[in-house]
Length: 111
Image (cartoon, rainbow, N blue to C red):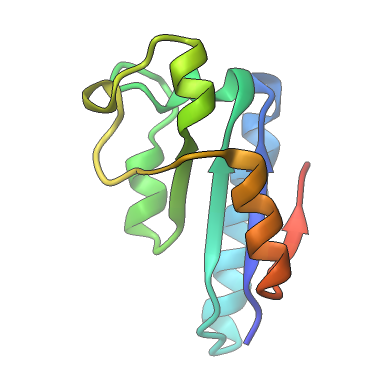
């Protein structure tokens, strides 16, 4: 079982992280891997989790990707829970989430 956490904190990296995520999900499907794929969004990239964003993060959730948004980054930008796209999960601290997942054995990828 392969579990991976992807990390994005720069808005300019969306095309790369989305491509990486799709390739990972495709590989997992083709290899009958039932691991977890998570995307942690923090820093300036949290603005792309808003409902009016051109980044459709809910589509990632439909692919089975666990999308988590950093509460600290939201608070710094005055983003409320209701401002987020559907089905996104909020974690108290992005950096703590990354550390916990790595401690659990997740591979870490930051494009």
